[in-house]
Image (cartoon, rainbow, N blue to C red):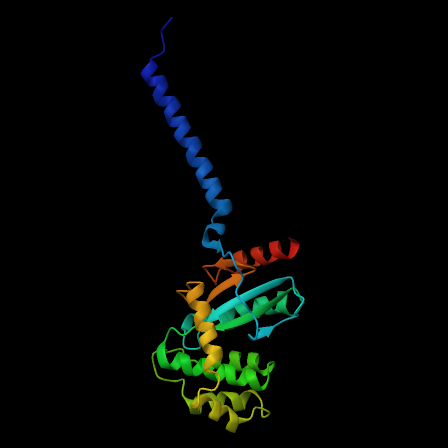
Length: 225
């Protein structure tokens, strides 16, 4: 009877073990890959005196760190947000909070001050203004200087005739709402936000804001928690 070669047997066992470990890795990656794009913060961002859309009693709170000058924020506003609004916000399952994130200099600041000024006049109209600002962002060349006082007034006028344009202009020129913008800037620093848009859902940071399935999965889990 021919004896088995111990070295050959060891190689076969080693190969089988490698295949098994590789299979486990691939399965684990497939099931948890989306979760690896998420982290959890220890303390939820304060939403006191922030623009909020949705029912106050909603079980899920999504915080969006956004910038009117940011092209990715425009895309998120026009592609992802409508889906989430229809499925979760309008049905009372989630509320959304907007935090100004000034990553593009003076224009970002002007847009943020204007948004806060509209919010101070009419909390509900803020969201129409927010949507209109992203809609008016140029698609061809986002580096063009487009956020100006005149443009903001034009956008506000298109949103609603009830917005007091004279007061809005005064608030922008005099930076009346700058303290509110500064609060947002402190939140950006506190949570080390380095890209826009960044989403935080009940304390869970979503690093890929365009992965709609992962976002829905997190929301659904939080609703059922």
